[in-house]
Image 1 (cartoon, rainbow, N blue to C red):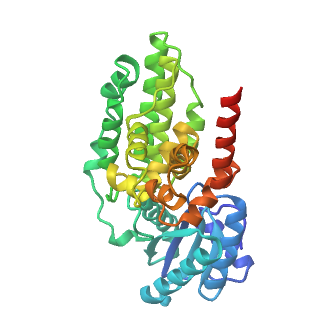
Image 2: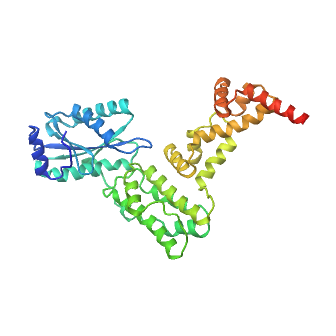
Image 3: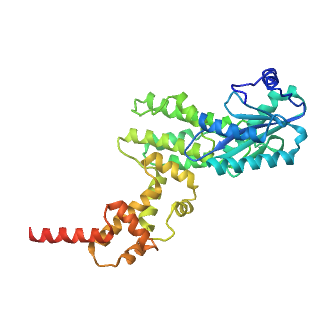
Length: 375
């Protein structure tokens, strides 16, 4: 594998020749990125994946290298054909997922002459980053994309967001944020960086508003740090979750108290009201709120520092402690009353949560009541 970044055609050809590879005139350019929950691309993963890519695209088929954006890129002979190229890509996807749980995404472009390499790499990069907006697909061919031009005129709703954060203390800004990001869902966007630009613009607008009016706001990161954090997220839901978290932090610092977003309040209300349902789960809450599982998890984690599943268990176990301590119900009835069909599983969770088995906890509570009676 060639190390470093080779954007210019001459540099790529020169490096390929060092490995005894003659670049094809008619070729495909394939740029590779990946999605993985709660993780970003890093050198360790890049080395593993790079080795796997080499196995599928040896010198006879193409040249593998790392481009300036630190993305693995392959120049593949056009004689391979689209069907064979897709077959190799899908085999590679399956192997990487099976080995490391990393979901690869591919941007593909074609060129008829080696002098078009720079343009082909740009097109492959644009194609790859459609994975931000279309989270259900993994392979994007530039030549097949029909770009949505309306998204270029979308503006961030600055006024209602500022009003929601700094003036009335309500979480109305969340609805505006949801409406804004919905414009980009399942769209193909040529200038995919435009979304990041709008998010950065909004972030700075909020900080400027606070600064001009002397409003104390906890700035969690600089513009450059925020831009880098945003660029490292390759899903629309992830970018929305980051914006929600940043704006929520500003709202908290403005009020001086913990202000939970409407979505977090909705999540906690659903858990409180429906904890006894056998269907209660992250997926259940996602259906009730109309949000994706990944988005819910990211927003809740960013705002509360907790996982939703842990909060479901906590709510159920607190109810169980009261029922077990009262000593009136059989254990399997208690399990059913808080949403568990398996009493053995309930007992394991209860012991993990309290440090005591249900029977042991009941005895302890009974003993404490008796001791209190004779004090």
